[in-house]
Length: 232
Image 1 (tube, rainbow, N blue to C red):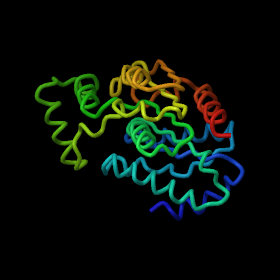
Image 2: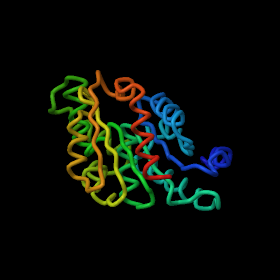
Image 3: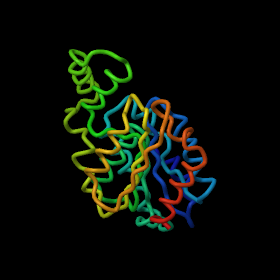
Image 4: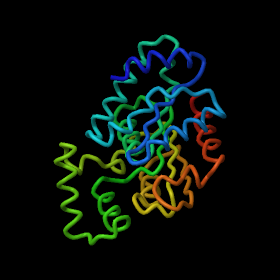
């Protein structure tokens, strides 16, 4: 479904690197703002920036398959060096980026902002920390709803269990201290479970999706430097 978009955008990046950008649900503008800041410093192409709405509606694994389909399309382009493809995601998109990178091994650099360790813990943190509801019975109800909605077992959506497989590909983990939906402890746990080379950046924020506004210009600069170092 993204072939036409890719065909239109790819000629712009024949001499640059590719960044597959996956925004998270609930903050569609976040991905556009991140991309604008990265583009300001570097010549990156966003080949897949509109997975956000799909991620709201469909299985995390389906979104991952879309990324793999985009990679397969990129492989057909002679001007694109598969060794210069990186992936970045926010929230659910960050978790999807980790899962997809760990499963495929086809990325040269991976960055994830506000990714969760596993979907069950994320449900608990959202219910108790964000919605201020008791854990019982709402967590079990949320897990059941997730499994019915996504048509997959919640236990299968656990970036923490596979993030170690990304190594030796460089990994950049960003988390927001003060995020009640996906607390910064998720980033710390993901960082602990990951193997080198890896970088962790904790940003004080006022809520979920606040990392880029809290960090200001430093966000695009640091993210851009990470991709610049490992993709060009």
